[in-house]
Amino acid sequence: MVRSDAVPAAMFAYAKDPDDPQKRAATHLARVREHAVTCRDAPSSKDWAHTEVRDDFTAAEVALAKRCHGAHLETLAGDDVTPIASHYQLIHFDVPTSLREENHTLSITGLVANERTFSVSDLRSRERRSETVVLECAGQGRACMKRRFWTHVPWGVDAFGCARWTGCSLADVLREAGPLDEAAQVVFTGADKGVQGGEVQYFQRSLPLRDALNREVLLCYEMNGQPLPRAHGYPLRLIVPGWYGMASVKWLTNIEITRGDWWGYQMDAYTFADAPAHLDLSRVPVQQQQPRALMVPPGYPDFFTRTRVVAPGSLETLQGRAWGGYLGVAAVEVSTDGGHTWQRAELEAAPSALGSGGGGGT
Figure 1 (cartoon, rainbow, N blue to C red):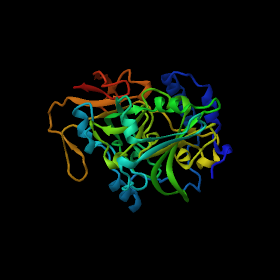
Figure 2 (figure 1 turned 90 degrees about the horizontal axis):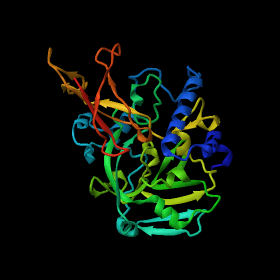
Figure 3 (figure 1 turned 120 degrees about the vertical axis):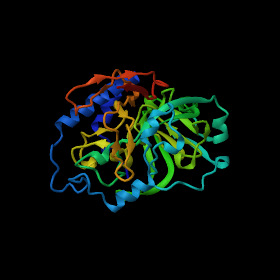
Figure 4 (figure 1 turned 60 degrees about the vertical axis):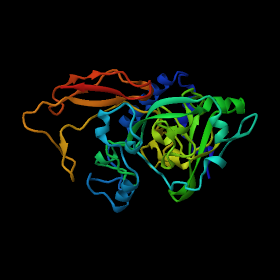
């Protein structure tokens, strides 16, 4: 059961944020940093959800890590687009194996003038749009933390991928349904169903209406020029460029327009909070991506530990990728002495405004 008083106060404040997506992302980043400064430094004695050391992985975490895989970091040196098999993959509940494109439908309901139902064929007949987009899990780097949130996938720095997504504009579909004047929020429901936090649920996330109306948000049926793989959302998924991956709901079945008072479990689950999320109404929702840079692992790996081996005296050209969503990337600096000194990397052009840029240095 979701109540309007469960919606954090910050969500209502966002209605006053700038209209420009880049400025909204900058405002959100400032909020996240402010929350990080004011939150408690130490966990309470009742904090059962976080670990105290980095290497105490549970059997359940290992099972999740096997089921959900990260990107292969060495592919950062390849093309701008990550191969499908190397793109990170998080399957929250089960892959809905019964879905078929020929009879799958998407319903638009709620505060609209015209409730609509679209087949995938209907959506394919609309203007095709493609976007090269970096998707990144909000839990990126979780395994590197001492106080790790352990009831989720123990990602290293590999929870990302940059794919070429093709579909039709969500904004066009929503405008055709006609959001009413009081509409403020768009709730997306996927077909994957399970139990989390003691609740039986379908995976659901929401966006503010104005973010859902951004032209680059897509209803997708292709990935890297191929039909969506089933594990990546076949036959239809949402792609929200510039936001962390939880916003890009897979196996999409329903879109509901609300006044802005919906707050589901997966909204609580992805928040910066100083207490159990449902008790902290000052919590800050996880939304837009923050800038990140990753290096192509140099040398060769040890099979088991993945420790990199470089021949003594050899000269390596360091390469990598950087992205920042709507914030973009102004510069990347590299240190080879543990952070004592830094030098500026050379940046190449990004494949798109919301894709990743490359860089190299010696």
